Length: 378
Ligand SMILES: NC(=O)c1ccc[n+]([C@@H]2O[C@H](COP(=O)([O-])OP(=O)(O)OC[C@H]3O[C@@H](n4cnc5c(N)ncnc54)[C@H](OP(=O)(O)O)[C@@H]3O)[C@@H](O)[C@H]2O)c1
Image 1 (cartoon, rainbow, N blue to C red):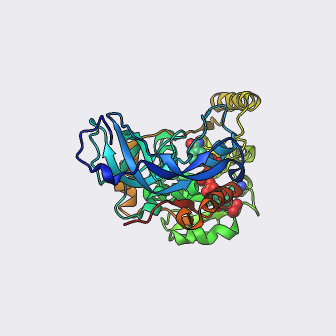
Image 2 (cartoon, rainbow, N blue to C red):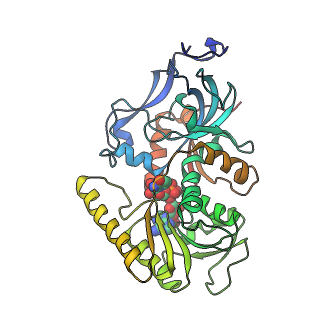
Image 3 (cartoon, protein in one colour):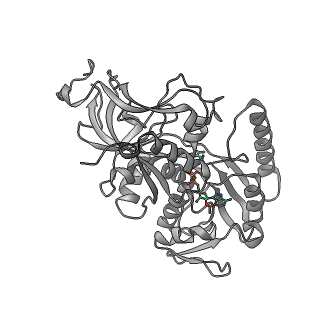
């Protein structure tokens, strides 16, 4: 199929057209998204690209923010556009200089905000993919890349010093997808972990095997124990005031998280947010200027106030070596697993599966990852 590849695959295996989601404008899923059966399968691979038969994809809040056009100042699409960032599938074709994969390899990856995993086939540079964890299904594997890798980078490469044995960390949004991965990663390296979480999601945390406690005075060193603050009942800043946390990792957003964090961080402690003050992330010139001023103000005070609380607004970077590390050292060793809320199946429910996927993610009430099943696993 690909003029630039040197593989011996059978061309008959790959059709010329595929089923794929198509976005025709910015807006709500029901208004701008359709499912087409005749979208051309990418025909040419550059030397470093692979073609992947997609089995599952997952949705992240960034997907509905991109669909709505909230981020269009930073990411303009030409339409029609196939959305979807997270993917799990099987390599069906490789470019001539691809070193890390062979046809038939099972892979997972985060494609970035421009590539489209809501399709039967996706093409991308080999550096976007890593081998899929052996102990996960395709649906579980698609749940991992963006959410887990974001928390991995925040905990292990951003915080100064990175989270490790004995570090005290509070995670705002323990039941969010990023929060659920962060708890497990932090626990895996022996950190003391506290989370904010509503009562309705306590059972979700228990599914990970943790014993929940709401008693803040207990020394939180038992690795199976998790200190939980019900955010509907208490403000974590007041509840844990002066408790000298090393890191507050904010997976929720809103200015209040930063205000509360300053009450519990030790001198020199880090506040790391992946959301910022605006939970919907509506990027406009005005909001960027305002966010820029607020960021500079917080950075200024992190240097010149006596407490030196660091403020970091973090954005995920693609890195396949980290996906390899997540696979071998955390997932295949059973230290980290994805929790899945719902699998939406477009073979069964057609375009309604896509609409439900977006609506549930946008509700902010997901209890684990939301998956789009694209093909049956063999
Ligand atoms: N900067 C980056 O690179 C990056 C990367 C990944 C994600 N993100 C952003 O991070 C955010 C989280 O993403 P996600 O996929 O982890 O979200 P998610 O799974 O959709 O989050 C839903 C969960 O958040 C909980 N929640 C909502 N409000 C809360 C609050 N005030 N306190 C505590 N928990 C609360 C909800 O629990 P209840 O139902 O109990 O409220 C629900 O369980 C999104 O805004 C996303 O865009 C940024």
